[in-house]
Image (cartoon, rainbow, N blue to C red; front, top):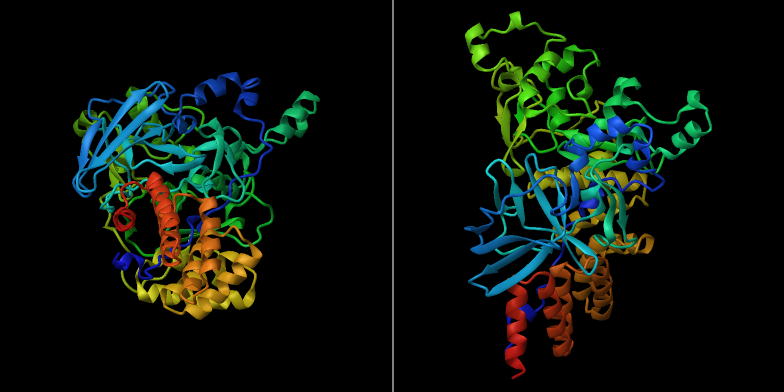
Length: 550
């Protein structure tokens, strides 16, 4: 048969895993929220009705119910057709695309999101979790493409769900060590955000209470902490920034309530008067821009307006939040006429914290916590030449700033150069910092500097063989040197850690084919289609092998 370009040495690289810019999941040792309910039954009952407590779980479980009247739709961008059906075992997603002939189904077993705005869903293949390309949007009561999936021209089913994705939605995560997105069943032991996310581990507290040492409680009350430590409790999930970077060698393995989040993560934002378009998790950044927060001298925080244990009923929300505004402001200071205020139900929030679209989710609006007196200038992206600055206003080092620029750089050559220069300086300071090394190798790789990229990838894998992106990308560099067996070994190992990496599996198939192992290459491509059934490169390559074997 004639060898097409697919088998002529076109090997793929993959981007650095998102885990490099995030914290790892908290270690075990928590008591679980049900243990708290024994002594705090009323708080537990009220909290169980909040959005935070309902932020994850089994699809179809709980009081919230999705509507299936608008559960069949098409995506114009990809030409794909989708349909979602409720079954006894969860929600069944069926999809097809006429141009490719792909027609597959997935069982959506787990949900993420309280349902107030919408929900996303997860499915599992052989114990590996992936995100559904379809989500439910509550306001229009419809199913549609998930956030971030509009850019795909095919049906993407291989976006891995890593522990960092679940950290702010569930408790008691059960990741499989050494994998990127492998989880035991169930993937988390407690649905939603539990008590210990804000109050710290409860086991010691329970032991002390049972022993009668009530004056020696080990539990954390965020409201009694200093402003920075208090705010850190909320910031762990509601602060995103332009980039969030896990610190090198923090004081302890994990952030725990009562500590300073800035000791564990560095957050960077774009400076200037203009606020970037809102994101789903930009509440803290927006509030920091408000005159109310600035004038409070540290007294104002999320708990000034929100009771974390209870949410007001929809009919009572206007009065509930107006009462909180009136702790500092009088209604006589409002410039609206009495008639206008009465027409608006005296709803301060409607005017001063309007709901606005967010850039990272469709069909959804979120409350603007910048509390504007009048509309603000909003920029979707930072102007050219602007520099990142630390959110916490603390000095930043080359390492954290370099990693941050790598996160936001995209295809901007100036930002990529800035990231490279900073990370080169960071490597001189600490030659064993794996996040720095992996990101620096990726930058060299993208710039075509194969020699330096290969040397650093090899150093990374000697220190930590579980670095998936380093395995895949080093394999791509080695194949160019004729070191096929080594490259194939790296790709096989990476696929054990995340079997949904189509690029790595295609690389392996190409190498097998070039080595004369045509049947093995076909088997590898068929496995790729089990995870990514609409990938066009895989389909064409498999068709060519099958045609040549006839």
